[in-house]
Length: 343
Ligand SMILES: Nc1nc2c(ncn2[C@@H]2O[C@H](COP(=O)(O)OP(=O)(O)OP(=O)(O)O)[C@@H](O)[C@H]2O)c(=O)[nH]1
Ligand SMILES: [Zn+2]
Image 1: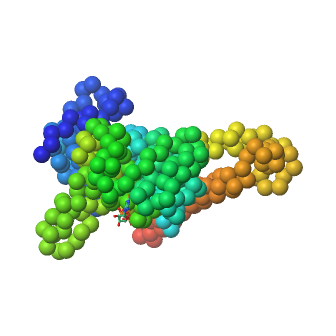
Image 2: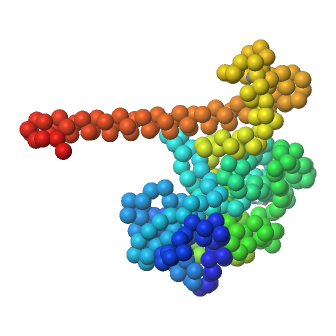
Image 3: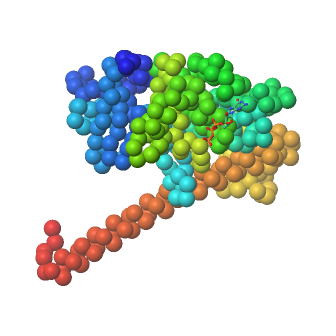
């Protein structure tokens, strides 16, 4: 088994600085999260299984401290990829300590600038590097046009075109998943994420092996995980990464649409909704040809989605508060009925 150093696993001063000099607990990085336990990897080739003990809020890729028996602390992450959970729209952390968000799309009808822009906002909010991975160039007439279109979306984007089915080509992703580097893949179904994962981790055979060995015929083993790549780094491909709704990405939206953001607060009315108000700076910029109206529409859409998630979050918080109040007053009434004094 490979023997890792903490640096190989992605450890940096960001984490070291969070630990007191007299700390004796041991750092490890979460590779898998199960219902009641996590699997983590520490220096050496130490694969540990630790009880969650009711802890919530941990994600794949997080760093924790442990004392061999239990998790003693989790360390503040960087590169947190979060989404609005389907249905509830509540914020949900999918992966932590992601250095690069690989936005996988194909050189075909899957290519969608608005979707790339949305993932870009997510990467910016997470402070992860946005890397657009354009697959299936071998099936396209003019694959280079997709790279040009990608680069036109935003100067913040870097694009790489590769045939995911060619293992050598897939290894051109090595700079983003070398020792200590974590690459997370996101994108629609069928764009080549699994193909890339298999090429980068050499995992295809292992998956087959696990399926064979599993008497119950389950094959969920490789879902939601941080896996070592053959290039010495780390890859995250979780089912949650496949459908990312906006949540907690306001700063990312501001970064991607800074031209629009710069005008906010300069409209005549401080509560301007930028729809039809006179003296609206944003509508003015559209009329003057400085802002593409389609771009303004996309900004509105992402803003609305984000606002929706925020509203759901505060509604859920209010509901929890209400329930707690009802529970407490119910307990109080119960005690009064039983003639007990209040404690
Ligand atoms: N020709 C060609 N085929 C590709 C390329 N990348 C992926 N494919 C094929 O596209 C199909 C879908 O690829 P997957 O890797 O399963 O896609 P995915 O993104 O993991 O899809 P989900 O698992 O549904 O999320 C497979 O048949 C791949 O062999 C590519 O660059 N060129
Ligand atoms: Zn306005």
